[in-house]
Amino acid sequence: GGEAGVSPSSRPRAFWFVAYTFVIAMLGGTLPIPLYVIYQGRWGFSAGMLTVIFAVYAVGTLSALLFFGELSDRIGRRRVLSAVLVLAALSSVVFILAQGVVWLLVARVISGLSVGLCTGTAAAALNELEPHSDNRRAALVSTASNMGGLGLGALVAGLFAEYAPLPTILVYIFFIVLLVPAAFGLLITPETVKSQEGGLSLRPQRLRVPAGIRPAFASLAAAVFCAFALLGLFSSLVP
Image (cartoon, rainbow, N blue to C red):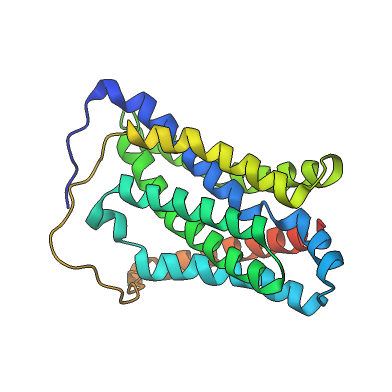
């Protein structure tokens, strides 16, 4: 591990490229939400199956967090963020080619993997690239990128669903176009960690909370759980 050398002059540009990548990756996570009613009308699946399609996204996200949470510490931030963009593009291609419910399930799992890989990696990269080593500013930009991207995804797809022809195709083409600047930015973004030697382990991450902070951690975790449950409820009603 350990940080790699990053020249001060390259930090501001790299910082905002990573922030843009974070926004776009999270945008992709909520992009299909306003389109589900169109898919449901097209293929006639039940409300229960719609719930399953929503849920498999969480499977992909949790799998990425549990099994690959430390991946960027071992192979570098840029490589993982590159994988994020590849998975986001692949998910979009599957959505474009979708011919039924199974396609939607596969696309959502891939999308969840992309978002799960991005969340921790982009936040760490922003913290390491912040030009003035201001952790509070890095955290603010990280949070804004995360939640802003999630909100923008539903908004953008909603506009396509309301006003554009072929919304289930054009919105994903538009999203792939948005990925291009992020890919370009990663090419000129310096690596902030040194790759570690040794094989990668796919064992789930051990979740540990120090005993002294467990009460505070539990209360905050409950608040976050409720907040995202409310987000999920409203997201399910948006279509």
